[in-house]
Structure formats: C-alpha cells, structure tokens
Length: 145
Image (cartoon, rainbow, N blue to C red; front, side):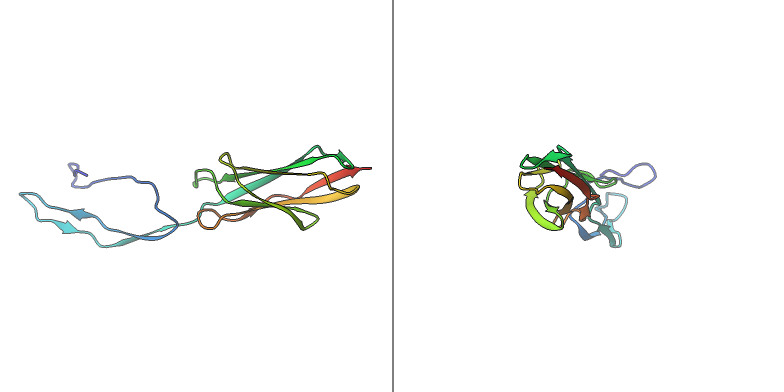
C-alpha cells in the first residue's frame, strides 16, 4: 500500500478464520527513509452469532399427514454469510433428524409419524467453528385424529 500525504497506509481485508491473529505493518523504506516494522497487534475474530427460526406445515395436521419442519439459520450482523452446519430437529425432546443446512441457510425434514395430540417441535443449529449454536423457539404442532 502506498503511503498517503499524512504518512499512513490503509487496507481492508476479509476477516481471517475464527481465532487470534497477529498483525504487523512493515514499511520497506525508500530513498529518503529507512524501513521499519510496527509492533504486533493481536486481532481476535469471534464466531458469528446466529439465529434459528422454525416453522411446521401444515399446522394443525391430520393423523398420518406429512408435516414439514423448516429451519432458517441466519447470521446476525456484523457476522455475514450463510451459516453452514447441521440442524437437529426434535419432536417432544426426541431427535427426529439431523440435517445439513443448505446454501440458502435452510434445513428441512418431513415426518408422517406424529401421533394424535399436541407435540413440541424444536430445531437447534450447530457449526463446528465459524458460527455460534442457536436454537429456535419451540413450535407447538397439533395433530388431529
């Protein structure tokens, strides 16, 4: 980067991976000034915070009818991008399925095995490194006989 009239340089770059990263500025010098190196600055990159929402359709449903659970996972600014990872869907606190989040931040699963009555549906997002875990608000599913 060239220096401006104030003798400073500026650059922007995509944040590196989650973790701590040492940053150093090096001036190579010119015919008037000797080169120099800054001290090390430690830049911490945190995992992006996520939000997961859950819907079920149709709701209410009939006994034996297929119900589709859809989880939408989004990154909350300043985090960006589409979180990748896995959504674990539950019915009455029992795991129904673990599904990879697609390129649009959506994971879906379908079941037709819900018994008549009221069920509590859940969805939790997990990523191994770049984004935080998040859980959707529970959804009540009514299955009519």
